[in-house]
Length: 349
Image (cartoon, rainbow, N blue to C red; front, side, top):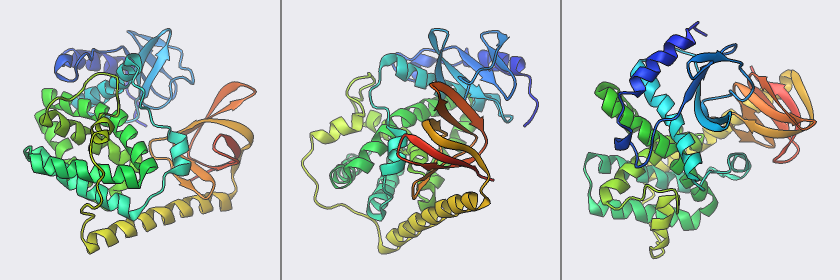
């Protein structure tokens, strides 16, 4: 990891954040305090403070009675991009303060979400429509998009519900991040848009499904704003599900060509095979770092996987020991007794 001066980065970010018109990002959104940290130090509100286990991942946390954004400084970033990232995390704090009630049950979904070719093939069709709607709003394409979503909501209710909640939480924060770049750095905003265009049509980028929701959620919000009457308030979220509730059932939609569906099926199989390889390799190496039973607090949910009773986590694992929260750093494969109880933790190299 590069040795970067946290105070210097903090001051650069503070100056850059001051240039952002928050009223243009999201109705009612205002900046929050933020902290930067690394393996040994933490800088908050103009001074170095003690780094505790509360400073974990890039997110928003409650600290000394207020919600703040935090960022683990691991690499150099252009200041415009860094600003957009920290404001993304501020927006999660804003969601908490407003009382958004659509947070996905991430650990539960690791156990219960099923990667099904039909569901994901229709989602790929939706992504094509979202990208076409980005180029210019078209009412007929919007109706087809809603029809695809209505169909999936009825045929794959658990998977669709989880996706929508992830899109609502992370997609809205990513939408805000995108708008920050549009204000500060048009070149970087265009690069983000191009990355959306590229990855949203690649079946292999649907895994884990949570990550793909950053882009689909942002573009869905962009489309719904274009359609008119978007609800910026905290109630009745996810907004798309409220829209679909008023629609008649849909019996058939475009699930793509035979070749597209084959590619999606191959992508599902490849993801499953890689998850199997990671788990079996770590278990065979048998470098046990923790034995249970221990209550799971969280894994790094960003790119966590589930396979045959095992979870994976990159960078850290948090658990309870005698009622006290503990954290270990590294990459791990975790054998679970059930959705809440750790049996054995293996180091994953």
